[in-house]
Image 1 (tube, rainbow, N blue to C red):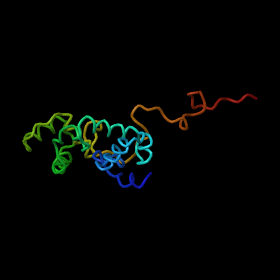
Image 2: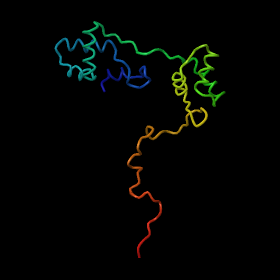
Image 3: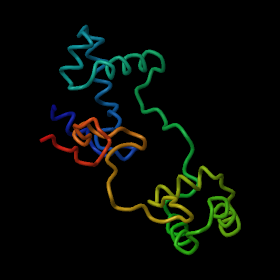
Image 4: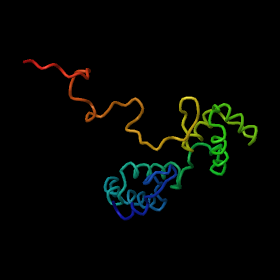
Length: 171
């Protein structure tokens, strides 16, 4: 990875390393290199970015006349980070309450109507999961795969028999 890319890598808006938007300066240099006759592939290799990044910068410059970042789509959270402690206390105080009951409590005490989906996302963000008849913090055990996924071949027994009995031996 080039030094330029290392400097640009970091925690992005999604909270993932390496998912940060490229700087306007880098995009300007990419567009300038292509405008000066350098092929997109060569410009991408030179600056350590993907060819699609070069294409997007060139198209954005041509269509909008600007290379500034586009706004992040979507609306802000209904339950902000400053309100997470309030929700956490509520979940600990009423672990048997349903999502709708939590929504009704939130509307009564915080004055903000929430949908079930919004409450569910906020609870999951705090690490709470629904187990049997009550809500509880998610366990610290790690999943081995997504729900419904097949076990890896290393964990599948080699025998084709489903029986656990030992086969009788012939004399």
